[in-house]
Image (cartoon, rainbow, N blue to C red; front, side):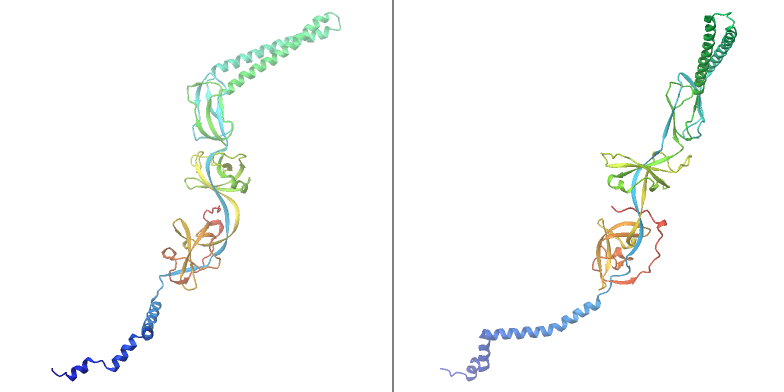
Length: 409
């Protein structure tokens, strides 16, 4: 047999250090201790790098936008109630014929003409009526002559009554004849007055001053009694009949001012004349009658039959307002951006109300001491970091020059 190589034998046998390491690795407690030491070493090595990364990220955050801010202000705003309605004639007079069976000879006015009270509008043929008037005058003259003779006979009878030349019966007959003659005079006068009235009715006159709004009269036509010939807006007065819901009627009363705006942009100021005593069961609204200033003429801005919108002036009240630029409308809701102490903005949902020039009332949702973003609000999102530049406060607009203000409901 070959002798064993000593070096080979020494290589295959484990040393004492290797046996110690093997024993340590095989012990569970030792394995846990070694794992903990490794974790602590990794934390010590990684922590400085993580902190450095966070510091670098914080140092690299930049504002998304430079904005201007302002605080809400309290302003005196007028309270107005908006309504819609039609413009109609205050009173439309229907002018018809008061005589019938006669030919219409003249029509002297047309639609849109301004007429005065008593002005002749149309003329009927009056030849036959003139003849009737002449006949009535002749009959009156005849009865007067007969009455004169009867009066003379009665006077003579009174003279002879004391002498006994005439009997009492004869004297009574003369007295009765005198009274009958006087009665016939009165009847003839009445007949003449009736014929003169028929003659007067051959001229159709205006019952009041105003504007002719419709004409049905035609030259040459023969019309009956009561046939409509013209329509006239009395005194040229128009009124706005606003439709107001029942809940708002208690806020109105006669004398309340209203600003009415026509479709062409023209505005007139009127006053409430009366409020309808009934409410339409279909629309649940009532009519409010507003008198408008008289505007007769072809170029009058308001016409009967026009649709118009208007606002009733109900007074004024204090309101918290912000600039119009600060309010952002998204998805049908109004928002403002409030600047927080950390330089970031919060998107706040608010309820907007009345308007005054370039300012909007904020009914709720915003504190009175909040900083509100004005310029740049439309480009921000909730949580954005911004750079603040305070806005220069502008002079408050006067109430008299305010834009239309609508009462919040």
